[in-house]
Image 1 (cartoon, one colour):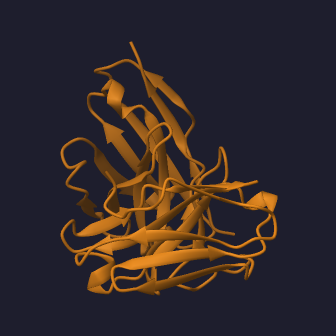
Image 2: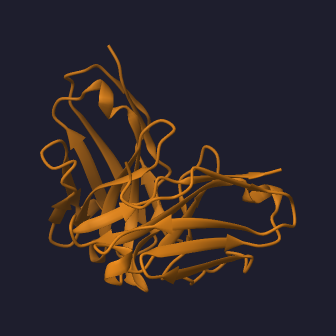
Length: 111
Length: 120
């Protein structure tokens, strides 16, 4: 049971837009901590995708964007491509655990 | 180029000890925190603990406190994760990741992972 809740799976056709939610609580996202997103391609290590709610590291396409409101956050992917098929994880900090927490991950399937 | 290179896969028996490593390069290793993250087969990511390499200040997740030991040797830019007595439930992929403070606290570079298999 992960501290941050994500849908197990989402899907979309090439070119479409998909959104992945990440729900926390008053001890993490709701406490004002930023949300970060990671992409894990099959058989590889996670890669930083979005940091500080909506900041893309160099090299990440602007098709990826993030937002945060209250105790939740979202990752949006527009212009879906086959290469986007991967697992996506949200991450924040948590005052109760005095550490870092992740979502359970969402598997994105490109139809 | 920042790189974290982890030691190779391990196959161990229950009760055995193990120490895996994570060697950093391309940046000043001692001035960052390095975290360890577990990913059990087909599951999500779990933060295990984190060490500030410069002075070996360590924090453990409550779920892993007493189960593992994190350490580092700044002279060789290497962080370690060790077990004194492995269990079958320790079978997982283990990642090290560099912690970055900027727009929040996140992990900007990751090792390639070390697969640990514990089986009798």
